Amino acid sequence: MLVEELSKATSVLRAVVAGLDGDALSGAEAARLVEGFSAVSKLAGAGMAICAKAVAETRYYERLGHGDAGSWLGEVWGEPAGAARRLISTAGHLVQLPELGEAFRAGELSASQAAEVARGGAADPLLEPELLERARKGSLRELRAHADKAEAAARSREEDEARHARIHAGRHLRTWLDADGSFKGRFCLAPTDGALFLSGVEGEANHLFDLARRAGLKEPREAYLADALVAIVSGQAGGATVAGHAGGSGSFEAAQGSPGASSPGRPGGSSRAADRPARVAEGASRGRRGRPGRPDATILFHVDLEVLRRGALSFGEECVVEGGGHVPLSVVQSYLDTARIRLVVSNGCDIVSVVSAKRTIPAALQTALAARDRTCVVPGCSSTFHLEIDHIVEFAKGGKTKLSNLCRLCRMHHGLKTQQGYRIEGGPGTWRWLPPPEASPPVPGAPRAAGPLPPPTSAPAISTAPAGPANMPGTPPASVPAISTAQGAPPASAGRRVGYGPRRDRGEWAPEGINVSMGGEQGKLLLE
Image: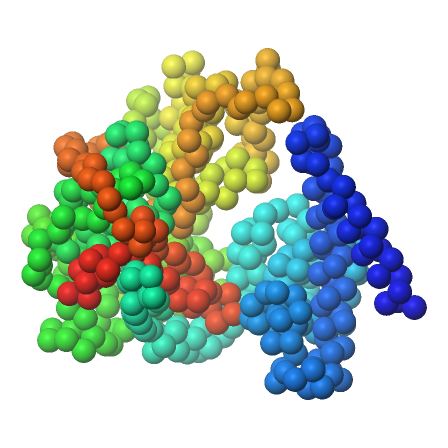
């Protein structure tokens, strides 16, 4: 009976989709249809989860020639087996988390939202209502952060340190040459090492992004990250010649035979995690001048004051490294004596009282703002790439340079606010993005007006130089290296990219390692 009813509903939906003509829809009609299809998708996810769990419990997948339910569901669903196993795992928590089960069956949550609520609720069932509220009103990024806090608070100090040691022990770097001739790779790092990676690579990628933007060129964020990685390992960071347009070579004119960094397994290297803070301090003491082409690395830790006093986490508190997630308090303590570490202690100092009569943002205020606004504050925008500081009430109109009158916006939203009259109001948790008073909805089919190009998104860029007026986000360098416009790049170079992110299933810094893809010549530079 249920199968027949579902078949009828599927036929109706198939007919609706077949009759769609996107060009004939107004923006309002299209938005309402998207909302409807989204509701169908959420209901379908809940139905798949419940039924797939039954297939797993009855082992019916074995009759269909599969070794486990995840591989079977992945084949039927057309998604990776890992995502399928996660959906089945979510269904397994619905009995212990009845409010989640009710909301999931009602189509209120997507499969990803349900998985995060299940993850946090499994760590602490008392947090189920709060996690559901986050799922309904917040972004998926915020929900994941909330689930991370729930898991971190549920771990003992010994479990936390054992987890960190396990992640470090599993670090790896693997490279290969793909069939199309591109050099590809994957690696996995502990959170603190991931933060060091971000500090150097993101800083150089921001520099390259600025150079390309001035020249009127645009490429994906992943391409700038790949170029930044090659520039750093080849000793050309901060001054390399790049090809930054479609059809260009996309590679750095790097000097061959540049000295490589010490690494585990090479002379002078060390594989001990405990040696890492000392090596960071040594590198910081030399600085950019002492080691040309190797930018300073700065790690930013966020720790609640009560965590420092108590020595343990409670829910809602954090002990995290910027861009890398939760770390044991002992790891933060081991880095405190190094020169390139910034520690933001929540409620530890009254940064709100820092006010300047100048437009320039004081260093302490920049740090407080970066800790508060880790993504673009515009609701629905989760961009973390090249965030720019904005006066909510313009400085020219009497706006104060203080925390309550500042926020961080992505380049696209900052351009809309500055050039086209959009406004941002409210504060943390209550931000509102308002269009210009005279703005009217676009006419269906009319060409869009030209506007600022949105930057690609990425993980937070960690400052690679002491904060100050000369080093504010978005400040151009004193000198601009030449940009090559050579033609005839190979396809593998044009598609170069670096991708990374926190891994949710094992707490590692990269979800499936860090994936690298670039041209063969760039790959040779990395290996050298």
